[in-house]
Image (cartoon, rainbow, N blue to C red; front, side, top):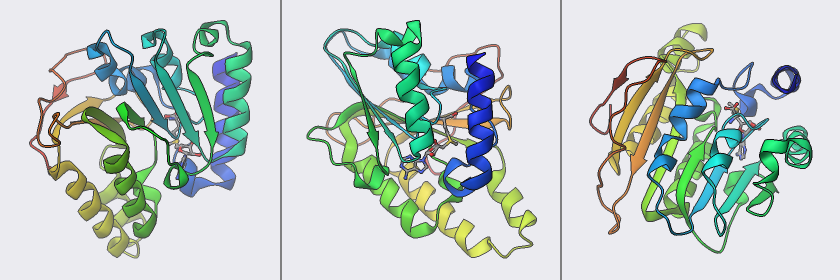
Length: 239
Ligand SMILES: C[S@@+](CC[C@H](N)C(=O)[O-])C[C@H]1O[C@@H](n2cnc3c(N)ncnc32)[C@H](O)[C@@H]1O
């Protein structure tokens, strides 16, 4: 029931705000499990987790079970309808109640979020491909600013969306997609990166896990795993 209601909220918001919503439906559980996988490696000490663009909470519900007393979870969401859904879920969904002491919902764009401390884990559902280059540059800057040395950043992108978007717009969107390529490749180049293929999502997606070692340079990537949803592949940064 919750799943259907969330899908309906998503579809409605997508109609009016495609640039920021970026998809017709919430992400699948398979994509959610992959993007939250770095939390399996969490230390015993308290952690700070940031979720960017939680929407109706498809990733949040898989972050919550990893949380322990003393942890912090900040959700940053710009769409007030999604913020209302998240607040309702935290209030009424039994499985989310354990998250209440840890969680703060921030109703604003990520670019305007300036917390006092950085994060050990960042999970981003932002639709990077949709943004004007100037906004995407600000978002990439936020990731650098908000990730602790030693921290992990995970995000996703629909498979082959960039070439498909070029074709679908008859090349008119080409210059913007070139800038998206440059910005996202620039981000990848600064971290150790790994990639997972998630076929059981609509549309299928790649999840990227980026990690930064304690001195701010390259670190070990998330260890390889293989699961039911498809193959796991790794690529050097920048691809
Ligand atoms: C593709 S949806 C992902 C939602 C959810 N994480 C999922 O996977 O089902 C993108 C989400 O990012 C939010 N969003 C877009 N731009 C944002 C920004 N600048 N700051 C915060 N949230 C943003 C949208 O409102 C939407 O909830």
